Image 1 (cartoon, one colour):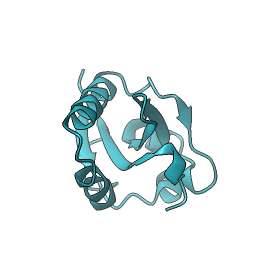
Image 2 (cartoon, one colour):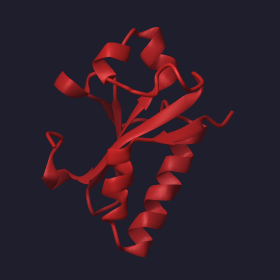
Image 3 (cartoon, rainbow, N blue to C red):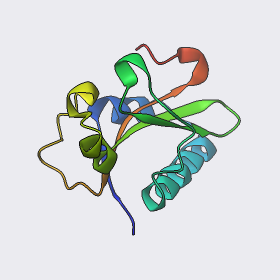
Image 4 (spheres, rainbow, N blue to C red):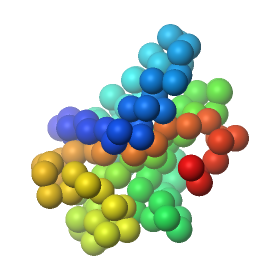
Length: 108
């Protein structure tokens, strides 16, 4: 079962700044794999990122931060995730929240 893909404005803005075609292609492949198996995360968020999950992308150190709606609801993380799409989208959805290189950190 493939999950539905949604993105935040911040994610779209960050993705648009990645100009390297190969990087963008690899990011797209990782996102597609997550849509097939969203449980294939590399870690879960802490602090302000609690309720979100992250996935490493490639050798350039990109991180994708996403919310998995099914688990978000099950674990009652809606308020933690601050997802503005929570009531609008199906539970079989992923919301891609951020993409950045590791050295940029999670704080922005």
